[in-house]
Image 1 (tube, one colour):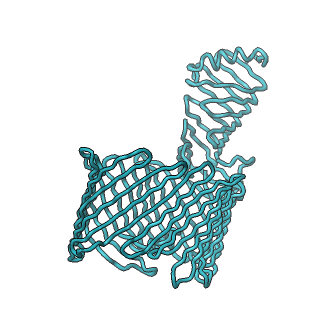
Image 2 (image 1 turned 60 degrees about the horizontal axis):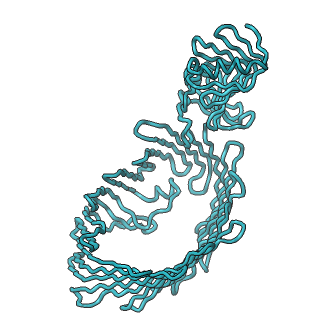
Length: 537
């Protein structure tokens, strides 16, 4: 081959790599740097090169381009694309496919990388990587061997996740999750080993319009699924024992749960709902079955008919309970005032008792300067009892100015003389700080006060619950993210008499391994946990 001086090289390379890109790879190959470039006929060779191709960056000790066969070969090559880092002793590029021999790949950009997959043969296409018989290594230590590997580089999910930890409830545990893509959705399979709880198996499928989750351990299962498109919404939910949520999935049990299966579909401008449910109440140590039945409901969306707003709904259940209601209303505006009045009729049947009632709702809204106010009056007259069963008045006032927002509302039951007050406010302070406050006071519900202070990397919150003849309950929480990857959180549940629950968690990376330290105090027991989570490339 004949050597080429770098100075006149630009025009020559422009002709080869840019003016005739369709003859090579159907995209531009841009040579950014080279020590020595030689050419002979359709062959172009270079050493110590940096070039770009197919939105990927290459650093190679040697490069050979054969224009006639439309191929590119290189040795000792580093490739960077979409946060991934590849290396190969030798690569061959044909079209948009890159074959890598004796190489490795990783998402760790340290030099040398802390963790990586090594393989004799790696195939890198436009946005996908495949490898045969890859071995995962920490530094040079082999940790995991796989028969094959395939992954979409555009995914945010890690294809493999391994978590090792220990706490008082589970003992030593090892969790693993494998992610892969299929035509019908993303699939997650997990196998978890617990010293005190045995083996847990999980599976999850998700896509834009559907998701299904299943977890099984100790002959217990947790299942939920959702499917939704513009024609129908279907949901399924079943728990044999909510302890599976607490012991295996680190979730709180629901106060009320059920085995539920239902489907919802729009019917013109209305909504029809049909399903089956086994409703149960969670008592802390087990279930108490309450009702098992099918149900059917039909609701119409509020719609105008000759200047009036008409609203109706009906529901029926397998145990005989039913309810039918209908409302008709009319609204009008005058300057900054708006008024809406509706009247209706309801009829219900529950526990062998029939109740029919007339209902009405009046609403007036207005605006003055920065303030908006609202007055609402609701009544219900029972034909069965021949008396007024509901008379509620609601008042609210809100304002939204440049750096502050607040709302105050009050409700009063004229029949029982019970009242309730709600307050909400947000205030933007200096240096990125914001202060929020909300509170509720009423005879029926517990009084509640909440204060929250937030900044870009910090969130502090304190909630206080109060009820007559019961001790005050405090719910403090603190979340701090001082820098990327480091997280510190503290949450608690404290009464006037004792500290019931307090949990502290610190999460930080050690090289490519996410480390979590947990410290908790629950029911006078100290829980200590340490987790190591590794997201494999």
